[in-house]
Length: 257
Image (tube, rainbow, N blue to C red; front, side):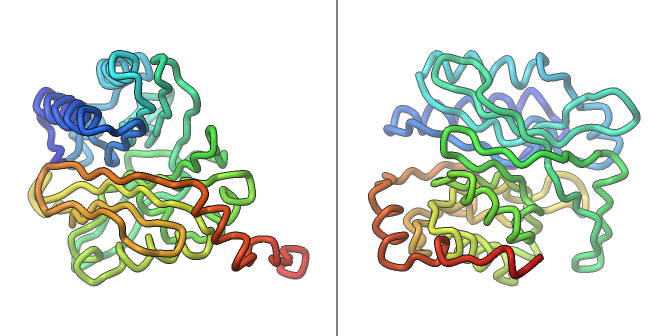
């Protein structure tokens, strides 16, 4: 998606793509980070919604109608205080919330001459979340491998990464390398839904949404447009890889502490 300050268009695009993916056989659909609104700090403050707001109400209704699991990317969640939550919700096929995750690592960096200060608008979460074998994360979390190791240790077989990964770091290869590394390290499928294009002046995401298998092979990749991709996930592959190359079982976390 190319989410902007235009919330009505963002919702229409999400609805169209989710329905198209479901009609193509998808049973689990992942939206990108901040799919409901994306822009500068003022836009994010103005566009924040509570958990019962229009964005997630649509997501629950649509998941139930289509009988799919829906990872509602992340939204700018209006919470008490001056800063939002950057919040992802796993919604089940019955339209009920299965899990809620708030982004642990906030994007306070300088990339390509642009300074990002996510902490100006958002507050971090503090809980690691696995929901029915799905490990939840958001964008910048991808650079913190210890999170994904913990998700795998808690039973994740799928790692989801809704993102608005910058154009500069996507083009430098960071996006693909990190996604494939997280898949290889944790012997999980990785489903990564990235934003694409310009959201506001100077704010651009790099696209290349992809699905990676537990051997680190890209099994589906989006063209650089508002679109979707699908892939069949054979969970026996997770078990086979973990049996042949039991690196997770061989970890010695007691030595690292």
